[in-house]
Image 1 (cartoon, rainbow, N blue to C red):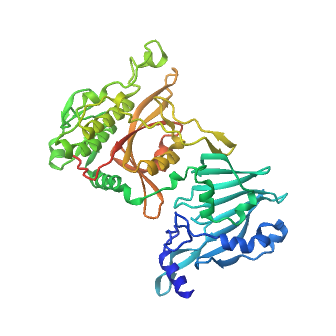
Image 2: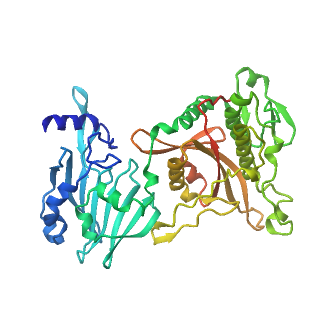
Length: 459
């Protein structure tokens, strides 16, 4: 047992729990507390809150030596019994003799392998049982009693990939059910394909991210600039092509705006295959037909309302054309992301429905993270061009209108611990997904998919 304990401390080297190679028999390899829960069920799960309050926090070992903590946590309206696996957090201890690196045991409520029973504080009635199984703590499955039935949910970052799915066992079955049993019971009922993560599949995305980062210092942002047809000149706001300034050329500086920046990225995947770059004019081709008498049609006569939508769609079509060695127009490609994996979300007002994909608008930006999580799992070879649609409120008091006037490149991936990550590049700058969504509140994001490449070679 002492040897196993030492080995646990060695591999559990961070707050995020790596997946132990000797975990109980479930295909995700997460630690399982089923035998511990069987031992404590009577004293922790079945007793009133007053009795449970007198229970001391316990440390227990499962059948393969993994340590779990059993404890009580309370909020205003409910109390939770938590069975959480031990992780090791590396911390710096400051002493008079210097800094000493120490390992401290933690038992996170949302670590992979954690199990939670939530009960009503007033009545003691059981409300939910939750299993955490992913490297990302925003992903879990939960079960709720509904009369004589039990209902299952699969949640990703507050959005329901499955909600209220009936399962054919009583609620108290999950007091002691192993995660392997949960997988077997719900294999066809819940979307477990969203948990099928293989970190080695994101090599193309990570190569491109590294190369883009390496070149960001060369990018000089121009508000209204764009490459010419050969990518050798800059189009500025007066519409006239201007070559790169000599001092910029000498210092290997690239001047571009958000559209030119995306073109530079896509050209970096095309150049190794063709030796050249995409032409400018085809990227400006309209990708939707407007009613000339409609509000958008009239406004489009004086404003460029769909520039980044057309640009990202046509860039994706150009990349696919090179990949397939056949010329495709956008409408023949299927590059638009249109999936609708979620039915509802958890909000401050309770559970509400999710709008999903809206034609020629995309998705509400608040759903971008869970959407990209699903895309990252199901399409590991792709990255995405995002066209941002904002609502403009003219200063002169004229009616507001919507415009696609910004764009970005988004690279989802999963690390070796199964944690979801996402790198966003916009107009020559890197940002996190959280920074990106905060920058464009209440906007829509339209995504097109492009095959990533480990032969990425930006011009």
